[in-house]
Image (cartoon, rainbow, N blue to C red; front, side, top):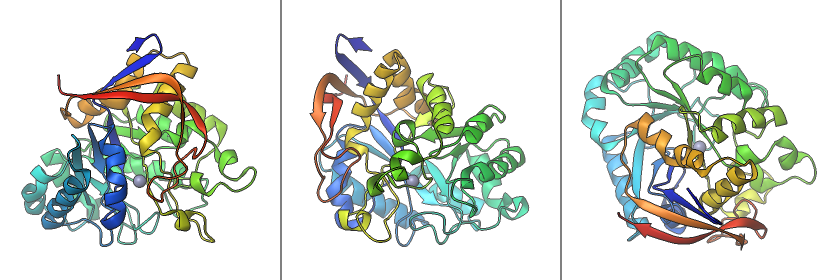
Length: 343
Ligand SMILES: [Zn+2]
């Protein structure tokens, strides 16, 4: 809702977040926990989070790292075709979703799925559908980098029709082809990042190479960004905000062999407020995109947290504990004024 130059956001949710582990977790977890009510935490650690014990222990490490912040980590497991119904039943209450990575496609995804044979996947995906556990998918093939996501749409469609009761979330979509798939299948949903709403490949590689904007899936063409903007700004009920905020230490980004990932967690809400204002979209739509849609799709009730944003320039820090954020050192239009917890 809009109060002159203020924006109030209720219980923001980040439906796709990388919190890493160890020192990185301790350094960056609060950046999300401070301004979001909760986030869906990705399981691509080394080794990936794939047992009940690992998911419970990782959640504990996250809760320790966020200290006294009010924040719910919605945990996920790293999909394995060998998961059976008995296992899924035993872990159901500890997780919010299961994340599927095609083998070798992004950071720590070596143990992912390589074929997408429906019969091979049926025991695990059928049980997930029965137990109402959503499947989050990093949807890219091993094809040409600009075509990987569009090529994967046929796999999404195959899975969506083979498992009509399974909620499938197309993670961090970047193409008009994925946007079009949303309306073709009742059980397909999507998350969209803030950086893919703002940049195209031109911003990454059109001039001097910008390592801090390099991510997977790579930013695409203007018409792809326009398709994403359309569904985000209208708060299409099947799309949710998912930052895919993915921190790497500065030396891993500013390197020969730059790691993929954009760090947006501390500025995501400010950038979204600016984006929706620029497009003259009422902030009620932003409220749905940042929380309401995710609550309905995942059937979750987040902690009550209200973020007061004001239209006042904010200079983005050069780094957060050694991690360089998007727009480091630049000025953005909105600042966080106040955060209140509870009713
Ligand atoms: Zn991700």
